Image (cartoon, rainbow, N blue to C red; front, side):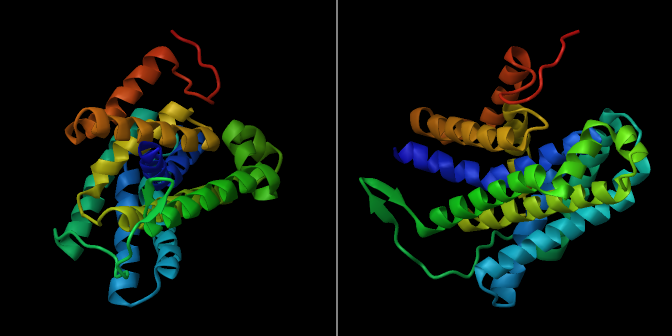
Length: 285
């Protein structure tokens, strides 16, 4: 039970970012490897608002979401939009380069020190022999709220229906009169806000480190692939699967191998079920 709770906490951290990653993939058909960089932006934005300006953590979290949306929206406008229509491989390489740029900008601005939020120290709560911290409860609650909100937005609002129409067939959506560039911009801002939220949740459960970038990028991508690219619900389920695999590795083997879980999950899914758990069926060539 303790392992399941820890897995749920790990999943809650990466689930919003995995949903943001799959949303961008669905809209633009490329894998954005800069996701971890924008998560790091969110983490340091939340830390600045909380530790430097003294805002409560929940308000700092909203600020981090705004910072993530602004940073990702700006990068999309300046970097990715001029490359629309290029191959997915080209955009993937550009996103990798952008990831290194973001990492070094953060390191230049904040230094290499590990940081933490200014929060009061609290002891864990023990429920039926399972130890759970208040921070873990907050992380799971915030992540679940974000996941449900995005699901409702995509399925029950005009904006969500427009996003799905553009993702399914951009040309047809344009012919039907939908403002495609504005709808895509909304999708970018939503994804950026989800990256910023994941950054805040990481700071609540772990520490804030300029090297977060690649430490979270692989689990994010693995969760999206395992769940099925194009499925926000699948990304959330995939995040739990990756979190469970990481905690099982740490429990039964050694924490040293936790970093390899994401790579192993990606490889297994691509070999056995390329569409992921909830993705559309793909044809092998």
